[in-house]
Image (cartoon, rainbow, N blue to C red):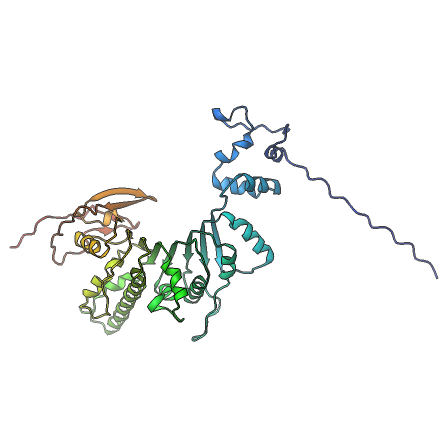
Length: 411
């Protein structure tokens, strides 16, 4: 029997040494970075190592790109640029939560101050009566928990189940640093999922869950305006029976939307911790009702819709209203109901002429800072005249074919 040849020793191939590029050598402080000359055209950068000032002249997006070039640039950026990733954006529910994903998120979240969660629609509808458990977003909050503000971006469809699950998660964990929440865009179904307190959706109202919302100091809401057109449905003038039934259904949807929004804001009005409220009508050119005066909207229907007490805010100091037309009498009512009010902002094009204040351009939009110290004059009575200011196609306002006349002729 032939003998087998003796086994050969395994050949171990040594890893080649990592060759740094001239730019990487520059970052690491090498004395002679070959073939690398960087000129920073500023007098205070002369005769110094360019790497010492590189982060001061690069925009944030370029710094993030530099971080992804190599391990050397990544380590150098993270060691020299504090607060690199103050803003993080994640998708919920997570497609797959692995140890590597866990490690990456933990490393990136060290300086996170602002977290954005893009909520994906539920892949399969949840049967009615099913007890919802907190979403896997809880795994995110176990790692990222020191952020100061949270933005929630609901999906355009099938938003109820994932938002309700996310809300349960937020109410079941401790986020002591969180003081501000921004939710946009919100529709009626999304708002139903986020109701809490006495109007809680499909779960027992617990003190722990309510304490999460009571701890907020700033709330920003962007409400979709596509359902506002239902407010103008005229059932009296419509003769066609089928169209009349359709308008009746649309009118009922508008009533439900007003009621859900009123109930949602009512819970916040009972707290004395919320200091800033910003409300915008988004997603169209519609001008919506004042969210702080929804009881006035109900009163237009003779109070038949539902019981809508006026919202009395205990601690609210700052109000921003986007897409809301404001008159002097509205300001007067809100000053009575918001005793701690210090600042009120509205779109400049939607502030009536009798309101005094100054214009400020913020985020490319003209806002009107209302002078709360000046008692607004009583607005002129225009009877049935509506829409003194019309919105243009771009969502702004057009004063071109609108005129306010300080008198009326009775002939």
